[in-house]
Every structure is written in C-alpha cells, then in structure tokens.
Length: 189
Image: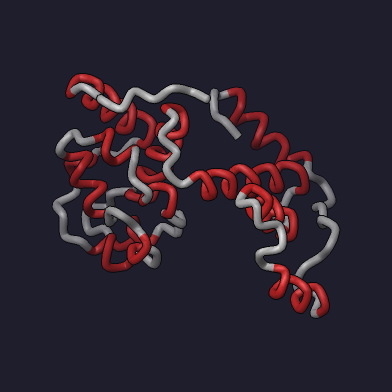
C-alpha cells in the first residue's frame, strides 16, 4: 500500500490548489459562502463537512483537509449544488476533482465508496450499462457481507426489477471508445 505523508506544507497545499483549479476549471474564490449548495444537497446530513465548508477550505488553502474529508466520497454528483449556485461555481466538478486527486495521493477515507465507484465504472465499460446485481455484490463482498441485501434482492428478482445476468447494450463500441479516450488522456477508470 502507498505510504501517505500526513503533514502537508503550505507550499504543497498551494500546488494542490493550483492542480484543483487546473483540473476542474473552477476557482474557489468565486464562492461567496451563501450556503445554497449545502441547503440543497441531498446527502449533506451524512457529510463530515458541508459542500460550503469544502469550498471555504479551498479558499483558505486547506486543500489537505478537503482531500481527507468524507464529504468528497459521499457526494452523489447530482449537480444540485452547482445548479443552485448564484455565482455558477461548479461545486460538483470540484468534488469530483478532489476525489480523483485524493485517490492519487492515497487519501481514500471512504474505501467502500471508492469500491462502489470503481465497480460502477467497470460495469459500464463491460456492459454499456450498469449491472445492478454485480454492483451490489461487488460492494458487499468488499464489505465482507456478501448477503447483506439479500432480503431485498429476491423480491426484486421475482418482480423482474433485477436480472441475474447482465444485460449488454447492442453496440458497446461507442462506450468502449469513451473509456479508451479517458485512458489516452491520462485518466483512470
């Protein structure tokens, strides 16, 4: 496992902030802390820091603290914060960028969410769409509770809401091209 430097200097935080601005195209200084992002966030109740607080951390160059937050892993990427922002700050893009950088630096605070994201993307790449049963099993096996949601799964299978085997789209070539393009540009999937 990658070793993590737990102390980050001010200069390193400034460099990390520049990387976030470059990768996301979003400048945290545009945020004037109105709180509309947090008020609309459907998962703010579960976060250790609200979206507004994450943006404030970035404004104060407390990048290391933002990268270690559970918030960036719990963000659903629903864009509610971005749509509600009166300054048109793309907070969801910032959260995604923070997740990517945190993963590169070994700061994954919510490993189960990281596994969920990876399993989700692999399912899309393989099938062209999400294979729900595989997604649930992948997450549960990582948590060492493979039958955790079994009581919900059987009724859903019986009603045809879940399929035992994955459905693949007819021509997965376009989806595969998207993943290839991401890899060519240095992205990880």
